Image 1 (tube, rainbow, N blue to C red):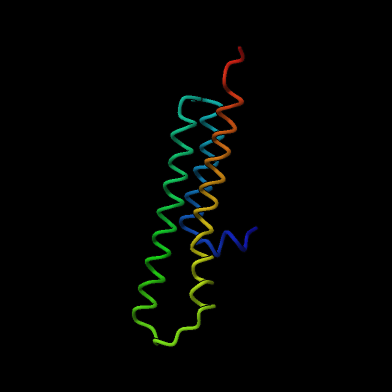
Image 2 (cartoon, rainbow, N blue to C red):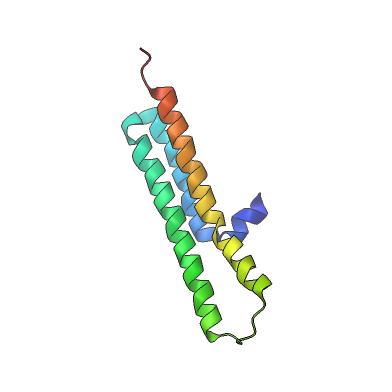
Length: 104
């Protein structure tokens, strides 16, 4: 698990982890903010994905023309780690919202 954390980029993964902690805190203290916190995690995950793709494109633009496809797809899979983490946090926020809904 820690390997994925480091591969996903320690800065954005740290921000996403702080959003996960904040999600549980707002679920306890300010339930109206659960959805917004989940959306923020989703947005940060996709921002990190776009930043990773941008870095890969920048590398490919300045690299040798004969770059192996394993390097390209390996970089894409690493760039997707924070996006998946953001989606998981968003799904957790949706589960919390369902649990917090008043019963009929």
